[in-house]
Length: 35
Length: 560
Image (tube, rainbow over all chains, first blue to last red; front, side, top):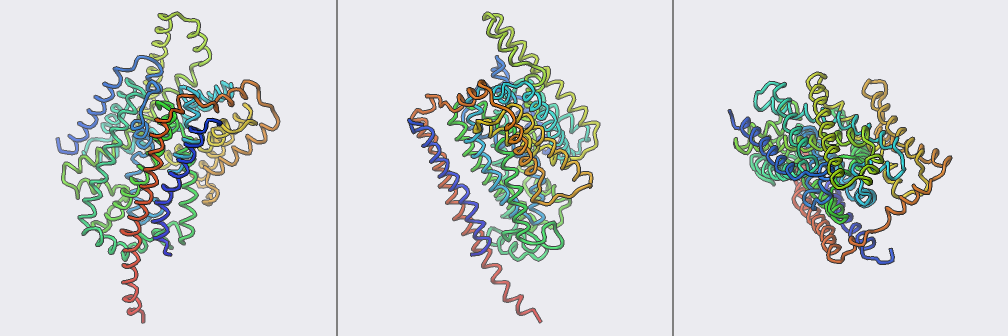
């Protein structure tokens, strides 16, 4: 796999991972009544 | 009056009009300092991005990309933009929950310490005044270059425009103008990129030409230009540099006052999280477009000097006159939005954190009747404006008198807060062991380490390796100071209670409909991220590989 392909994937995956993590965090913090 | 002069005058007039409109609604101190704590997502998002992206993004970093280092800027952006999410989730929403007027005011309440508030206030005055000077000179330079106005006139124009609306409208005006400016520079840079790519022969021709560009080999390879002619000798060295600086600036994004103070104006904690998600998306897209466009300019004119003026050259020589004038207004807007935020924060810190006493004010307000309260708040609002005017007058005197050294000031002022506040900010929320003395010395040691290392570097007495970047060393030293000093003391009951109270979730924040709306933003991030990865693969990585592969046989044939 070339460096350019890794850069392309990495740039998008930063957003994907940050989105998934934020999604989980919002659910944990604002929907869990036992928190 | 030519188109550029007219564009600049009209845009400055628009900002003043927006500031005047917003200023009419300023009745109380909370309106002036934190926009009534009622700002919606779009305004917080706009002010976050506009405050961060100054003229440096369209001049310094665009110039770096023109020279062949766009991929490094892109890698740095990946890391530093994550600071938005980390900052909002682990610090920003708790900062908002504290209902402080300024970030130093939060530190005072958290540690029950006036000296921490004053120290944090002084570091804002030192750091952001320096940054304000740099941005003022940067904008004056652009105006001088494109309009032919004298430097003094340009400095006065720039200063008057951001000072007048900030002075009258405070944060209410700043977030409105910031958002307007964010929309202006974002849209014009997209249009400009389209023109640049078309002028260079269309997308596939651009990728082919840049992939095999002989004058600057590797200009769009994943590591950009490396070798004996440039700062980075190998791809790994370039990657290390971009990653470490990206992380360091990520801490700046997460805790610096010109970013986190925006959250104090948010309508709710959900607005904090949504705007951070939006800022991450906007910054990733804007940096990608801006820096790729600046790289492509090489195919139209490879001899722009200095490289920092790439976008100015584009506006004056490539775009239709009207669009060129709008691009200049957009670049100026990026600078003005940062300048207005810096001026407002410095003014707030002088009037509230350094000269004012929140405790005395609170006691006086508690004992006052309704009329007295109104008079008291009116007086404090007047004092804040007078303080801001004094700061503004000082800045204009310094801007006219000091030698222009934009690079030095930006280099010093930008990251200062990461070293000084970074550790204390996060620990003030998450640590039960941090004491007032630990926090104070943590801030002091982080600040001194950063300033000391930068001073040694700038005077030529030391050259720090990338691994020992002053931002990161300052953060580590700050943590060590907090840990050592806090171990020798004990946390008071008041500090402990305040820290616990910060973790009590307000019931209003659990509204299911509001939570559902907030969850839309991470969804958009996932979809956008997947789309960006796919588009960059199809339109950049694969065509790049094909272009390079097609040249290799030719090269092999020519090798004797």
